[in-house]
Length: 306
Length: 296
Image (cartoon, rainbow over all chains, first blue to last red; front, side, top):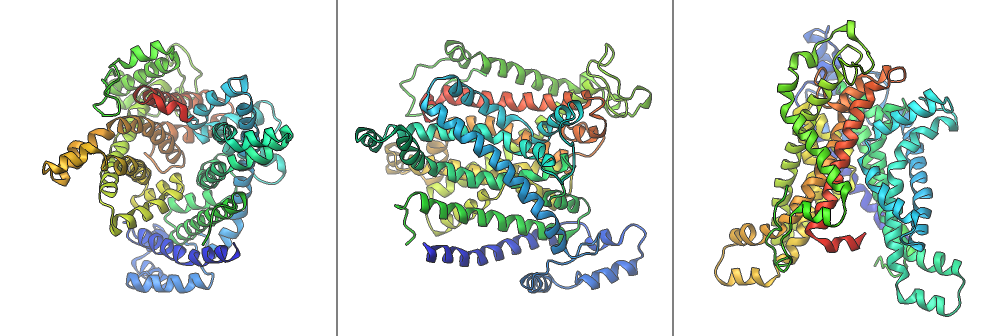
């Protein structure tokens, strides 16, 4: 197990290298001159040329990538054209906020969705069961930004219970994380339900019941543990998706996260910021997938990592 | 809407029955309502130029700004005095065109790559599949945002971004059935009669994935609208004064606490359209392949 995790961590390096090449190429083949963007409308031709030389933009593509990669390995993601500060600083400032929001959203989806799914699997055709199958389609049909604005309208401006925007206290976290997590509640409930229903018909559940184990042990030790593998898979996928959706929720609630940092950079073609944020998002996705694989092994020892 | 069951060896013993007959028989009135709602939006999209001219839809008129819904403006006016109903109707046209074109791109390219990667199993196609798997792990919204970055914000790059970011999922979805279909007897029969690979792929295997294509296209439309409106909301889609629903909501955000109608109209239009396409897609799946019901 330990050696498996180690091997996966080693694999991380070539994957990130691939991502860095892809992101670099994409951003350097785009139309438009980043140096001119950085210089602003009033700049003279000489100013633009000076910026090109300063940032190495006048060199060949492979040379530029070489510089980029060397700096990357030293933990330097370049500088923002706009703030002139290092990109790593911007990421260090915004990434924790995004992570906090994503984890909170995920917790809402799992802590509400999974128990709801277990309950509806244990009481098939009951009211909870019908609710779960009915609302799933609503969850995947609601645009996140509209849900967010509606929640803001009701709970912040009409009722005044929660602050509408910003980050700080736990109260600030409630509306953004609900916006991010609510659409996934039904997804998790539906998945847990179908997975549990399948496991509950297995022979080993009957055996466990026959040998007189308590209801609690049969349901949670035997059934849920075996039903949890598809749930963990989707958990990993959805965690990445929530991370991607964070940009929108962050914009709605003026949450100072990395998604907004990236989108704002895209608007002004601040390429080092775009490059850096995409790289961090990609690394996060790769690491989440690693976590999922490791959790598989803990949940189901039959999966071999030889 | 009432198309017959696609010719497929799996369904040939099923009695042909219209979609509406099937839905009424199953008392699935929600799906019928969804078809009606989708039809209204499609009609609005088609007729937009005859209902409201572009000039009224985009002209700023501050004297009529932020009026609540009334007889002259059934949905009220926005922050610069434009008729919300006109903008919602034009928004339907823009949203649906973007969604249709992007789904067409994603379907054609996705299905072709999926067919080829399923039919030819060698190191090259397995390399492509590994690449596709990597792309699928990456969140779609983020992928679409990156693609918009390449071409710059706008309606065309938005369409391309949604389309391209859907290709990986489609490739994986269509490769599976091809792997099974190419081992079926009718494929072997066609090959033994001397059919070429291209003829087997496009005349024998492709028609058998038709039901999947129809279902997936409907569900993809819903997702394309969802993702597209999100990107537009971020300012990466059509630029003002183009009345795209997501962009309209973003533009009116500052006024929405005092005048909620400015975001309610485009917001509910979005929600209803996406919801209808999702419900229609699910209904089509039940209709074409009733066994899939048991999976959920």
